[in-house]
Every structure is written in C-alpha cells, then in structure tokens.
Length: 345
Image 1: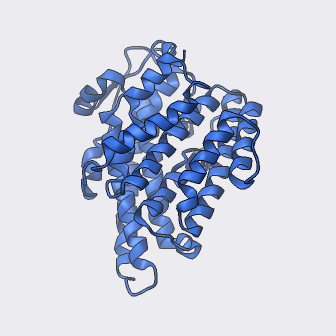
Image 2 (image 1 turned 90 degrees about the horizontal axis):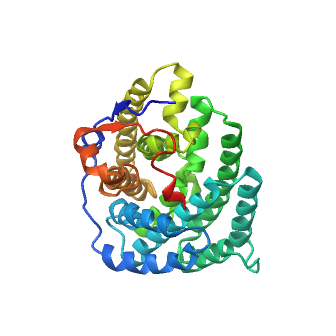
C-alpha cells in the first residue's frame, strides 16, 4: 500500500475540457435542491448514520445536477437530483454488501421497475417505484424503455462488482472499460439528458457508429476522471481494485503517477473523439434526428465539464482540501482507512 507521504499530480482537466462551453449553474438549483433533499431524506434512515448524512451534505449531489444539466427546466432538474441522490444511496448500500446481498438488492430494483404490482415492503422498492412514477413515466417511450433497461443492467453490474471486490480481482484495461460503463450508472444520467431536453431518440440513432462514438467518449471521460478523483478514498477503504488507476498500474506495470498521466492523455483523446462525433453529425443536418443527436452530444459536453467543476466545488473526493487540490493539482495519498472510518458510521 502507498505510504502517507506519497503524492500524485492530477492532470489539468479544466484546460482539456475548455472546448466545451461553460453554461454555468442551472437557475432552478435552489428550489429543486430543497425538494430533492426532502424526498431522499425519507429513505436515509435505512442506510445512513448521522456522519454519513453529513458527508452527503458536503458532497452536494444536487449541485452536480445543476452543473451537469444547465438547460433543464425545474421538473427535469428535480429528476436529475433525485436520481443522483438515489444512486448515491444505493451505491453506499451495496458498497459494503456481499455479492449475494448486492444481487438480492438488484432483484428488488428490477422487479420494482418492471412489475407494476410488485411491492415487497422494502425501502429500496418504495424509492425506486416512487422515482419511476414521478419522472420516468413522463419520459418519451424510447427514453423510458432505455432507462429501465439500463437501470436493470446497472444494478446487475453492481452485484458483479461486489463479487470482484470480494475476490480482490483486477480486470484488464479492455474488460474494465466496458464494465465501468455499466457500473457507473452514466447510461441512466445520459437518459435524463434526453428527458430534460424533451428529445426521444429512436434506438437506431443510438446504434449509429458516429453517435455511439461520441456517447462512449463522453461516458469514458466521466468514468475515468471520476476514477482518478476517487482513487485516494477508494484505496484508503481497500476498494481500489475497481478503479482505472489500479487497472493501468497492473496492466502496464507502471507506478501510480505514470498511471495518472496515462489517464490524462487518454482523456485528451476522448475529448477529441466527442468533438469529432459532433462535427460529423453536423454535416448530416438534413437527416431525420441529426439535429437532435447533435444537441445530445453538446449536452454531453455540458455534463463532462460540469462533472469536473462539481468534483472540486464539493467535498466528495478531496474533502476540505478541494480548493487547494484544484489550484495545486497535488493529492496526498492517505494511509488506508485513516480518514474514512468515521464517515461510514
């Protein structure tokens, strides 16, 4: 394990992502935040102790929604905030569970989404059905179908991740990239991009190679940057096996800083890939849905840039050192478990 004095230097993603416009904070942030926080508080008691609730306040997942979706109306923004809070709560629940327990939770989610009459009396079931009725039932049919399909795949992948964690298994890079796309829940948050914009792309647009290239680039950008920012806390909890930094160190036989630098370089390539996909689709503006597809890719740019901004505006990854880390890009690697025990109480 790394010593307490070890430090890493983060890439300057703010410069890399400057190709995406800074559209600022959604004007509905305050009202939607209050409503979403009141909603998720109904379910906190099942998972969170007082310290974890304090940690959630400092993470401010509602701020993430306001930065990721600056164009959303109040109803759309509320949906993004509810989803962010729901996913965080579910992630915290399964993070400490065995594979069998995580699989059981996944089955509850799947039944709650796909079977209208299902109700096993658990808080997970109640939370999922409530979210589905409030938001996804109002989405376009293509978006609603994909959301439910993607949600079921996400909880299944989280169950698999629990098994890998228990075995301390580290995937190769190619396998990890595909697996991380599923455990990240980004397909769900990207479905809400269409919901917020009032767009309902048919599946053949998602299957188009150019659109898929931009879609995957945006997903990987968020996954890889989040992995990089969360690495310190994850290794301190002994959960760094499912992190791209660890995967690269093992696969390429390099040290931690070299792995971090690799992530930075790869994110530059992914940014170019997303920009290029949008450029190509612009030339297809005469085709049905091309303009909508371009608008979706532009919104993914908002998401990527907003994710970077939120990562340093909240205390999710760097605690009270977030502003210092943003300025210096230097992260001191923590001694395992030293700073995290109290959070989970």
